[in-house]
Amino acid sequence: MHQKHAHCAVKISTFDCQPSIGNSILLTVIGAFEDDSGKPERFFQSFFLIAEDAESNSGDMFFYIKND
Image 1 (cartoon, one colour):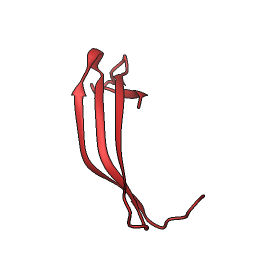
Image 2 (cartoon, helix red, strand yellow):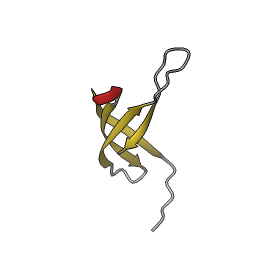
Image 3 (cartoon, one colour):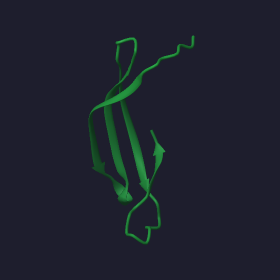
Image 4 (cartoon, helix red, strand yellow):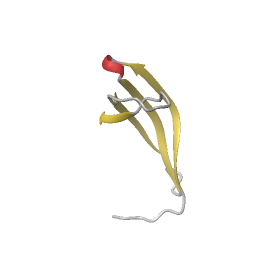
């Protein structure tokens, strides 16, 4: 069933980042999706971010999501 919602928001309660092998990062996020129904849908999501091989000219590092 598909429902239309005029308002939808993601509220992040907490997040944590931990370094891992090869300049990668383990990121966890806890939060809730909120819409007009007034009943938040809580979530917990983990991401494993892998560093790209090359850095930019500015020295910034870039990451891609290996899996979630």
